[in-house]
Structure formats: C-alpha cells, structure tokens
Length: 219
Image (cartoon, rainbow, N blue to C red; front, side):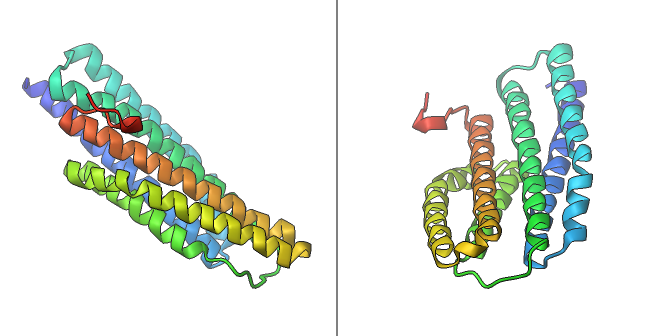
C-alpha cells in the first residue's frame, strides 16, 4: 500500500471510530433521559444533532477523496465502501437517538404512572448489540460481527413481546393511552437502532472477509 494511501486510511479509521463513539453515547444518553426523566439531557441531544450530521458529511467526503485520488483496490477498496455504508447507518442511529429524546420530552410532560412492561430488557439488549457492532469495527473482529448478526432474531422476538405488553397495558389503562403510546414508539426506535447495528456488522464482515451476508446471501 502506498504510504500516502495508508495515512489517509488511518485518518479515515480514526474519523469513523470517533463518530461511532459519539453516536453510541447519544443513544445511551437518550435512554438515560427516559429512565431519569431528564428533560434537560433530552433537549441537549436534540439541539446537538447537527454535529453528528456534519461529521457524517466529513467522513463521506474523505471516502470520496480517497477513491478519487488513490483508486484503491482489494481490501482497501472494501474498507472504504464499507465505511461509506457504516457512516450512513451511524448517522441514522444518531437520528433515532434524537427521536428517543423527543419521546422522552413528551413523557416528561405527563405525571409518572406505573406501567406493566419492561423496556429495560430491550434497551439493554439493543445497547449491547450496538456496542458489539462498534467493537467489531474498532477491532476489525469478524467473529464478533457475525455474533451481532446472529443476535438480531432475539431482538425481533423481544420487540414483538414488548409490543404485546404495551397493547395489554393500553387495554388496562385506556385513559393513559397517549403516555403509553410514547413507550411503544420508543420500542420502534430501539428496533431500528438494532437493525442499523446489524447493517454495520454485515458491512464489517464484507470489509474483512469479502463476503456479502445481507439477506443470508454469500458469494
């Protein structure tokens, strides 16, 4: 690999890892704002969304610059293609963190009530899935990326179980439907974060192994 290309790729690695860390923290803070009914934290997440968007643009521009100047091949090319896609998924995860923060603000507008469903299990599992996908990126760990992909079915099952619990709670407390529906929407946002984490893991597998594993397809 030419020295200049190697330096550009190392720079790109640092950029995508920093973006991944920022996005992971935003998701954690969004969830924390719900648990602690922290409207101020939720508002900060909403107000600073532009920073994630700007970083996503900078990473994309860096990828395109490397493609144009160095015409990389083989694993270097796969790395840049994968980073372009991971970059997009990270930005969308950031958007979902903003959406969760918005739901948190809505929830804080209501008096706290007791609800008989457990969002914490889904939250914990989704956060673990996101962390593992980003660890796989940082460490270029294909085995961990495969494990993330395999865990997606479990997340889907948890989402469906929680969705049924929310419906049951609406039947039990129909007068609280607006409050409870906010939790149902958070459920959907968390599911989307898990989907993006799976996308990232699939791109890491492609980056390292050169295999396309989306939709159970391998070549």
